[in-house]
Length: 603
Image (tube, rainbow, N blue to C red; front, side, top):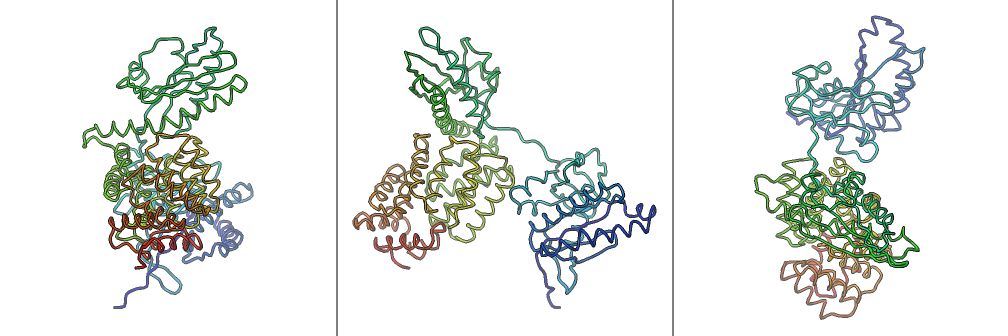
């Protein structure tokens, strides 16, 4: 028997709510309204979206679309048009339920068959009247506004479907989503059963809690009190934009003003893990602000800093202090949290802890460490498949595996990394760290940097003190023909977080910018600095080799190639060309020519 023709396609299933009752009440009027809806709303809009009707069933139908976005935009437009029509008092009110699914169908010349068709119709019965239901596989394909418009409703058991279905609902403005919380096997809609054990639950917030205590005024005349309060307010506001931390509100912290406070007691009273405290001193028109970060569990000082400024521009001083503290607090707290997670028993590790444990292996930039990071992130995703940080960091780790020639399946790992980045983009809340992970992945694996820039700019809009985001912006600017701007971004990253554990990556980024500018000697010098900062980072010898050879320093270039081939004896130009995805055209040819001059064989 010949194998049937199949195709993966997108199906929208639509059905009128209460059709039988409407027909019994006014048969001719209902049929007339249905014809008007089909003629004026449905048929004129299908061509624009490349859609066609594959089944009509009296009170509903199935429509096929070339893409998920086309299906979502058309169905939203249809339901908005129906809501507008239903608002007209002379019209018979007709609500339609709709569902959109990715469907593996059997083809015939004018029809589609298969289990996926039945699934689409079952999901449609779960949709809210006038709204749309979609599945996980459809939601995964969406970004931006279409994605955020759909709200998760947990898992549903559909009649005759033997497994739980994760669903998202959308309704037009002015309508309210139905209450989907189940009660004792109650049937929610015809053909839909709640699954009590799998309804969406709010995850515990595992981010560390920080308090900024009122700063002391140490001026002899006590005249800097208001300035101290303004600094605390600015620091609190800046830290509150750091999505990897939770910050106690200013009003709650100010109850401790003027009181001698044991930081360990704050852990008990407020549940905080870290305290920022400081002082302000005024002498003439000069001000000095000192601050320190303290671990409440041990009472240990983790960081301290000092900023001097002038009374002539207090606001600028407050901004500088807030940026300095936020820039230093993030990597310092991250390091402390990593150490905390390492001390936990293995069986007690949760998703957040596993991501933290993976980070030092990720930024080690060594093949064996990257493998460890990926294993830890797989464990994290087994615990929480929707963790934006685990998805994003795994995508970034895989992109390293691809571009540094650690992968045995470059194209397979590239596709997986991009898919994980898209999944992180759809599941994560607004988080600068996750946006940076996504942007880094897209930047490494695409010549066109436009979409990577979108995510990095989102990260910086949320937290302008996040050094990692500034580093990745520097790379994006280098690859986008803006290497001079890239150098400024990378210098800002280092200034914000001079002790960051991945500062070496900023040096490599600056080397990349100088390479793009044609300043090959400076590029080689900075590539050497990056290697000195992270000796195990073998891949950076590629950048050193091509820069040094183009600068005329063939001895340094050949030593760098020898180091590359000690780590991977069979490395060739052809392999490097296959692994580098963010350079194209003349940039790529210049990069390859430098490696050729340095002695890397063709392959």
